[in-house]
Every structure is written in C-alpha cells, then in structure tokens.
Image (tube, rainbow, N blue to C red; front, side, top):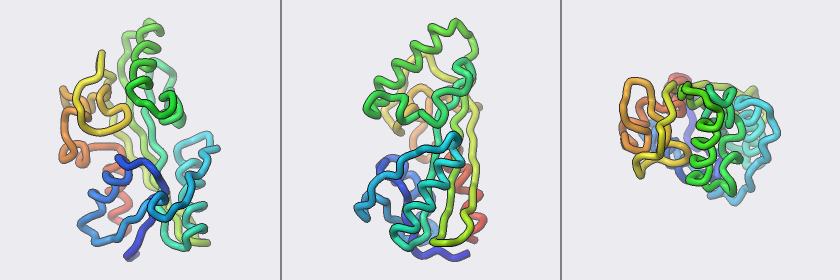
Length: 194
C-alpha cells in the first residue's frame, strides 16, 4: 500500500510532530486537520479504537484523502484504568500540569501502593469509503511520585516506561520515539506501507 499524502486527524501539535517524525523516512506528505482548517471530531466512543475509527473516517470523508487518527491515553492500575479514553479531557482545559497534579493526588488518596500504568494507542487508517485498518501499541510503566523533565507532552513527565529509570519527558524524543505506545502502533502501520 503506497501513500503519498496523509492527513493526521488532530490539532495536537506534539502528537502531529511525533507522527511526522516517525513517518519521515517514507517521504509521505503529512498534513494535519488543523492545516486543512477542519474542526476536531467529537470523541463519543467508549474505547480508544472506537474514537480513532470515528476521527479517521470523518476526516477522510471530509478531505477525500487517506487519514490517520490516533486515540491514546494513560491507564493507571490504581484508578481502575482511568483516565483512559478521557486522558485529555481529564486535564482541566487540557492543562496537563493541572491534570498531573489531580492524577497524583487521586492515586495518593486511593491508598494504593500500586503505581503500575500503561499508555495505550490505537491508530486508525481510513481511506474515503474503504475499510479502516487498526493498529495497536502499548507501553507499560509506572507513575512517578512527581513530574520530572521538560520534554514530551501530556502526562510524559510522570510516566516511567518499563526498563528505564527516567520519565518520557526526561528520556528525549529519540528514545521516546523508539519505545512509545504511538511508535509501536506506527511500526505496525509502517509494515503495511512497505
């Protein structure tokens, strides 16, 4: 499957840049929904997969191009898998500094010593009026006691991936792009493109 042009169904600059960087070797022209002045699609699904499909299909039909949509989030064991599909909305006004404070307080208030968590990502690749393909990626880790590092975006400053002693925000883009949930899902997508 050869793709020359791809629209990423997102207005999240961090997510768009990460996807552009991971797809750079394939010489695919990547645009975002924001670049095309297309509004965000309301996430009404109950799962990451449902939301990713909804966004990819809606934007693909609007622009007439292949569209890649991601729905991803942080799932914390001590909170029964929350915030999960509500990760972005969990942070008040998408202020992730506030979201991290709330999350750390909620874990502390739960009384649980379990700090295990994972980032989950579902990518949906939609072509106008064709079957949508789904690719899943996951990275396990733990929640830090407090935020560390200035890199990344979202909850990266409190997530320590398995096998490391630093948060995603401290590890830098090169390492994060090799091991993140999004890169693992994109690896599966890339196999389709080769």
